[in-house]
Image 1 (tube, rainbow, N blue to C red):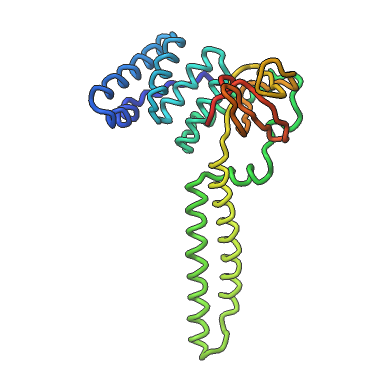
Image 2 (cartoon, helix red, strand yellow):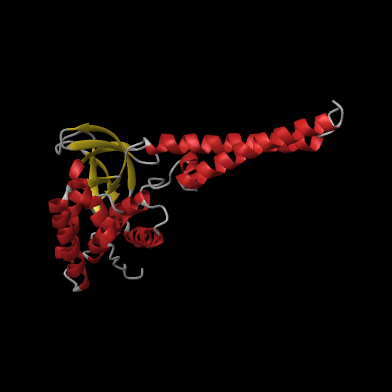
Length: 261
């Protein structure tokens, strides 16, 4: 995997920080600068601490999440790096650097995983289909097909009027039917995306996280999870959360062992 590249984007963080007033903006910009400076001189623990300070202040920035992932990866914390880069891609789907680093980090993790759980990282077909395109692409695709469908209906109506009431526009009818079906499919994808966005997901942070039968360390460990695995969050009991894998397996892990998306 190539070395993650730092992104200096003071304006991106400053714009968000300024909403809390000049004093808060100065404080957060200082933390941003400290993080960047520390990363560039190779002090990755200090860089991660500075970026985490910004993250705790609810600064929403793809550049911040990307830089945080870079710092985590240099520290050997692959699960946390994947979690941060996942967040960067969620904030900005066009973040090619974050997406590339995410893919490469998952490959590294896959090579290191032993006793891999069959199907644990294989999402259901409908999830893979829905997430193949970005939300903006799916939205514009639906709108384009929807408008084209009605334009085809108008074209057929005009063809009938030009033919003196006879249906001389069978081609327009076929086009309208095709576009209508495609618009319905695009609408289904869009509805699926909105439904998926409501599902709470998280990323496994530790290299090996034990999954318990119940919300207590005294329960039996049923299986272990590896860093970077995406899981669905089902329930919470104090500092424990019940999770479900893509293959349907469920269990309880400590909340600090996962990073919510």
